[in-house]
Length: 427
Ligand code: HEC
Ligand code: HEC
Ligand code: HEC
Ligand code: HEC
Image (cartoon, rainbow, N blue to C red; front, side):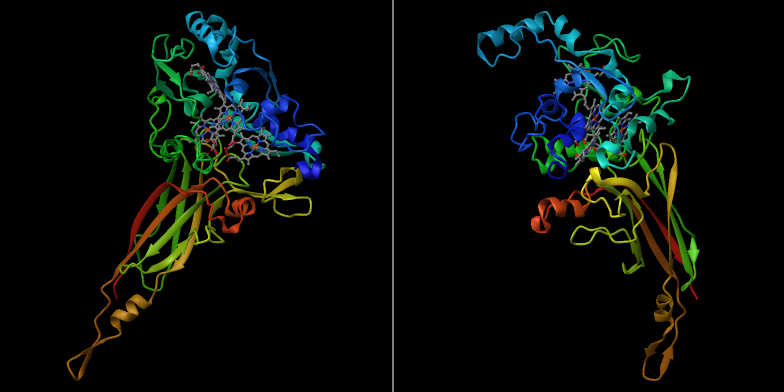
């Protein structure tokens, strides 16, 4: 982006991804190398979030941020001044709390500043296109029922569940189910769907983060404080519809119904040009032979073409696929599939129940020297298995970034599974 449109164009991304270096003035026309300046690795750090003072609902990082007033000697590195500051901040924390704890942070409108994204003419030279928007999805969904504040489930209630804590900042009187000495603070892992980046960057505790993410995507991470208003079961559930019995040679129809149960916004959400979630189905006979399959990942980590997939295919002004997250060239979307909270989608399949099974059985068998006896086909079974799989990054993009021979791929998380047996009638 910097090479094509100049370093200053990356300010668009920086407001959400990289505010510290953005406000340090590093993304300017004269910047030669955006990644040699200090701060570009900071991302959305403590100070970024805790220094925001006002947001509106336009999105694209439309917030007001202030230079926070620091506690005396807070920024000293080591030495007795720092010891004194640490002592004072714990003994007299009021000022620190006043500066960094705001009611605003509790609201979904606060998250909206960076979780509502669009492109406009300034970025793509053509016009306005909506991108990820967890906020408006959530606002219009069952998690935000009008006139029933007790039933509302906000972003931080799902993404920042309460943790046992002996931190001086534990306790809170503003949330209805909390009190000043509850010995809890809000989890700052922001568990979502990212099982790839923490591992790729070999971050400390990446394995634990990944395990929590997997549990979250399967709907197995308990959040006791909202159990009464949340939902039970998988985050996204699967149901298999198929006939109980079929004849050899008959056409079999399968339907996999996918229901968004515990997701606070579209499933999947985020940059859908990168994220992929799909249905993997396999039908086998009694000998384990595959009769029908869809949604397999090949040895080069590509998903079989034609698979039922949740994703988006944005295009540039010539109709070419945006496959490198080159948002500055994006003008529209030719395909998009995601599920709204509480809603369902369905994947349909058809295949023929193999006639050979019966033919083989009835073809006859040599008995003794003279007789050939045809045994009637006794019937059998088809075993159907369906899974909802998810991965954070498309293989085309990873190959583009890291090279085809890097072997780097995003781990696939199996979010839900279901199976059924279909009886094949005998002859
Ligand atoms: C993405 C934004 C974001 C980032 C990044 C962030 N915080 Fe927070 N933090 C919040 C929100 C929102 C709350 C308020 C939760 C509430 O009041 O229910 C909060 C609350 C807190 C609290 C009050 C206790 C609690 O957890 O309820 C402390 C202390 C805190 N943050 C420290 C930090 C530190 C230290 C970091 C960096 C390691 C950090 N925060 C990074 C958003 C953020
Ligand atoms: C200053 C902008 C900003 C604010 C404010 C903000 N976020 Fe984010 N958030 C981001 C960015 C940027 C990412 C993507 C980071 C990445 O993957 O590199 C992100 C990622 C996330 C993720 C996914 C984490 C993962 O594992 O990939 C969750 C969940 C999330 N945010 C929730 C929230 C919630 C809830 C709030 C409000 C309490 C909030 N955010 C406020 C910018 C922000
Ligand atoms: C009812 C619980 C719930 C609420 C409320 C909720 N989310 Fe989520 N969120 C989820 C689940 C489950 C996932 C994982 C599935 C997915 O990616 O769609 C998720 C995923 C995400 C991701 C994608 C993370 C990634 O790594 O790709 C982001 C970003 C996010 N949420 C932000 C938000 C914001 C912002 C809000 C409030 C406007 C919010 N969420 C409200 C349950 C919730
Ligand atoms: C409105 C705020 C916003 C803007 C502007 C924005 N992003 Fe993001 N971006 C996000 C959030 C929030 C996520 C995390 C969603 C998720 O994890 O599913 C994200 C995710 C990503 C990811 C995937 C990261 C991961 O950890 O999975 C990449 C790469 C990315 N953005 C690059 C960019 C680039 C490049 C630009 C500028 C052309 C840009 N973004 C502009 C908010 C923004």
